[in-house]
Image 1: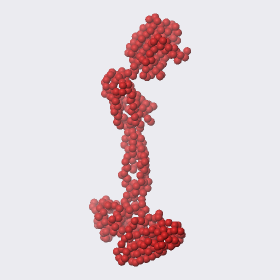
Image 2: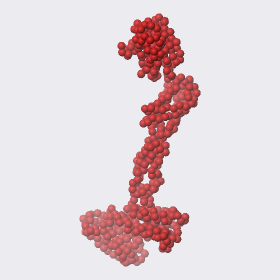
Image 3: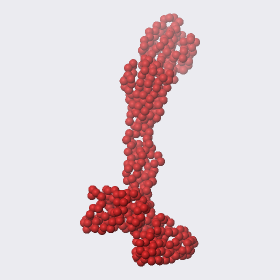
Image 4: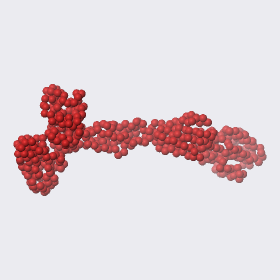
Length: 540
């Protein structure tokens, strides 16, 4: 006969006798001589158990067997010969008897019950039903741990006493683990979970029979206040560190006088106990021109990354003379030369100095103009090495300029060589493809007449226009034409000229004689330290 039919038959008989009570939980022992078999049925309430039995008498009854429960029920059935039998049920830890009743046709059965076992003496012909109501979870504290992604070892401390140890641990296997304490007397208990490094709470859920339990949660521990006889099941879901850089990509312009920029950024966001998070390069570093990847890593190996892009402008540099005579156009209010920082008035005094006998002043003048040009949007790439060398040469003196360095000394020669590179940059010799500044002011001349660049005529034009200009004093003169991208397309004038007014035509062609397309073009006049830019429109 299949086992399930035996169980159904046994439970049907018990129900008919009024002895099967599912609301209490049942542990049934049934022996009937009429059917010549003994059936041991188990119904567990509050969870499944593995119940062991020791039997005496042989004749088809094993000396030991188990009745495990699944979904709260289980049974074993044995065909036996007529005779007397005794079965000892061993109650597993955490379970205990609350009631035990017997119905017998002959009255020959005897039951001896203890807290941890029950001895039942059976004689065939009797119909014996033993009902046990177990309260495995009544007065219990159960801590259940669920972990995501990995197993962990979690330690706990308690208020101790009344059957609750002062400390215990739960190790998860397959992402879960638990610890239970049974048969606790009524009273107040507290359990503190200590979160190991690398883990943090995502959620904390507790179910209680009375709702009187309380939870206090923070990043490193949870404090659970319990009142027994509540049945408390706490579920913690922990996750390992997660580190997120998010939309942190950054684009900045280069710092004045630097081939890069000092960039500060906030640390990435984290969930979980990530320990120490370090970023490489760190916040506050000098990021060079171009794109740099920043990688942020936690102490447990998790990481994220983002990019820092340092851009440069393409404005053409302005001469030292322009910056010397137009302090109101300075884009910065202080300048650092070497390891010393100078106010605007201090830097202007150095720039206006005419001394040629101190190499430190010669270099400082060129460096000040270069710093102002890079702050004004000029590309520092051609002078990256010279900027670093210049600042190194002007460091270590322990005071502000001047340093009285003879140009003929080894240090003086190094200073004048660096100054020569910076002067070439400041005078536009190293930035051929720069974009002329549209904001260059008209600069009054200091000789006869004015330095002045006229609007080309006609404008718009096709195929030719005239460009008139006035030079206030003898100087080297450059008149060049650029497209709107800053590309030089034609050199109209390049040479020395005396003071006076001039006019020169432009036929709308480039240096190779090729006709240029319609569009707006810029023309820039430079005379010594003076510069002016205007626009003209070519229409084909």
